[in-house]
Structure formats: C-alpha cells, structure tokens
Length: 106
Image (cartoon, rainbow, N blue to C red; front, side, top):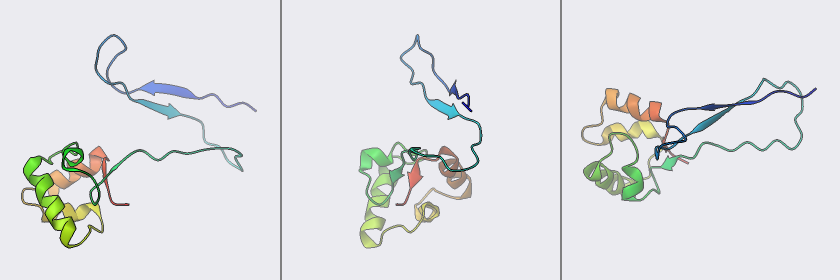
C-alpha cells in the first residue's frame, strides 16, 4: 500500500529571507525497504572544521574555536563531550551544544 508522507516546516516563512528547514514525517515501515536512501543530518566535525565552521556551533566563539583547534592538533577529540575541556564550556553549555545537534566527531 502507499504510505502518506508529510512535510512539516520548522521556522521561517516563505515570504521572508529567514531560512526554512523541513522535516519529513513518514509512517513507520516494517519489513524490507528497497531503494531507500537515508541521509544523515549534516554535522560539524570538531576535528576537521575550520574556525568559521566551528563558530556555527552554539557557545563556540572565535576564542573557543581557536582553543578547539589547538587541542585537536595535540590529540583528536574522541567525542563531543570532550569540549568541556574548553574554558567556558561546562555542563549547561554542553547540554545546549548537544541539543543543537551540529557538533560531531566522525
């Protein structure tokens, strides 16, 4: 049978210059699916991102992006939670970073 899918807008509007992001909401499919291509949400790899890319992560400013680069040159980050080693990134800010979902380690 055919399943209905719905697009749900999450911010911005068509009439403005604000970005619009979309979420595809589909019913649960049980069983084999042929030809389904899933794309992972893009993330910013803290081990390879440029300083300007790092500043797209919440709470990461120019100084913190510089600290990230210095630390990763010594040893790559194993996980995003290691950002708590950056001055000013404590538990509350780490929760915000995780909730944003942009920072990653590949």
